[in-house]
Structures are given as C-alpha cells and as structure tokens.
Amino acid sequence: MKVGVFDSGVGGLTVAKSLIEHKLFDEIIYFGDTARVPYGTKDAKTIIKYSLEALEFLKSFDIDMLIVACNTASAHALEELRKNASFEVFGVIEPGVLAAVNRLKNQNSSILILGTKATINSGQYEKLLRQNGYNNLISLNPSLFVPIVEEGLFEGEVLQSAMKYYFKDVKQSLDAVILGCTHFPLIAKAIQNYFPKSVLIHSGDAIVEYLEAKCHIKRSNNKTSLKLLASDNVKTLQSTADLWLKN
Ligand code: DGL
Image (cartoon, rainbow, N blue to C red; front, side, top):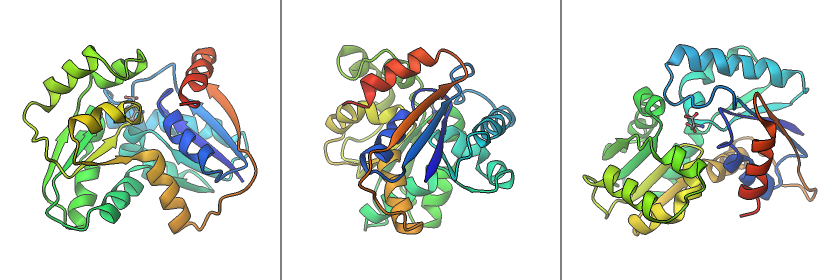
C-alpha cells in the first residue's frame, strides 16, 4: 500500500518515522511544503488552500491513502481534504485524542495541549477531549519550540529557558501532555523531564495505534520505502531525514 504523508515542512518526518518503524506501508510518499512553512501562524483559509494544493500534487503519485502529519493542517483542512479525495484521509488530532483517552482512565486527569497558534485557536483537541469527558485542560502555544527544534537544540540552555518561560504557570504534576505539533516529539525527553509524572502523547505513535485499531492495517515484514518531496530545498529535507529518522 502506498501512503502519502503531508506536512507543512520537515516536522512530519516524526510521523513518517513511526510509520516506518511499524512497517504499516510498502511505500511512503512524503511531501513537505517547505517553501511555505510555517502553517501554524497562518489563518484557516490559507492553511486550507495550501493543503488542497498539496493533495492535488500527491494525487499524481497514485497514493492509496493520505496521512496529514501536520497538526495545523489536521485542525483546519481535514474536512476539505476529505471532500476532494477519492481515498481515505487521516489527520493526527483524532488519533492523538484517542491515544490520550486510552491511557487516561480518570476523566479528571489534567491534560496540557501543546500546539501551534493555529492549532490551539482551532480548539480541535479541546473539543474532542471534552466530548470524551475530559475537561481539565490547558492549551498552550510555545511558538519558540518549532525554531528551537529546527536548530537541532533538542536539549540544553535555550530549550530549558523556553520551557521555563512557557510552562511557568503550569503545575509540574500534570497527568498528560499532548505533543500537538510535529516538531515536539524531538524534544519529548526534555518535556518528560519537566513533567516527570505525565504521559506524553506523540502523533506518530497515535496514528499507528489508530490505523491498526480502526482500519485493521496489519504490519508487514517488508521495509517501507520512503520518497521525499518538498516545495523548496529538498536537500534540507533529505539531511533532516538522515538525522531525525536514525534517532
Ligand atoms: N507541522 C506543524 C504542526 O504540526 C508545525 C510547523 C508549522 O507551523 O507549520 O502543527
């Protein structure tokens, strides 16, 4: 089975990594819209327009399914993408919420949702969590985390200062943190150290669980082949993939 994985840039490689590790597909066609990243600061209309253009581009590769790795595009464009595709389109928000629900038996659990400005403003995570009875929610947009990750600063002073700054009003005894942005799994270790008691929800692992449970997609024995495409600077995407996919 050939799957298209779409992201605003390089971040969706964290989702591709989970798909590759779990061997859910024979082939991944990854498209990062690196010419127009970030999506997280744009308005819904623009995010939908760019996502639909990415869909049209990926259609030319004869994909059987599309996974929207980008939380921002999942939050705003999923419905439009589904209307315009003849194959199934999955985002990462519903799987992330399901993963949280599966791990948090107590509905009073305190959950911190981290995402881009556009993801947080969409209120999608909150809406789905509330529908499942979880109301103890805090939403945050730690916008400096994205460039920090892109600089490869997965630990150290800069990241620590940014965490202190954004998390100053959040209690460290939280039950769960939703890493609602493609970049955040790369700093999961630092976030886990900051919130030692929290369960961390990772979009890549969540979509794997979701596809296995809901779509009955079985793991295969074959290695997944990965084709990397970008709207700008595919070499940077390739070198980021070399770095991120090996860790
Ligand atoms: N891929 C985006 C997300 O997961 C983060 C980067 C961006 O703002 O485009 O929300």
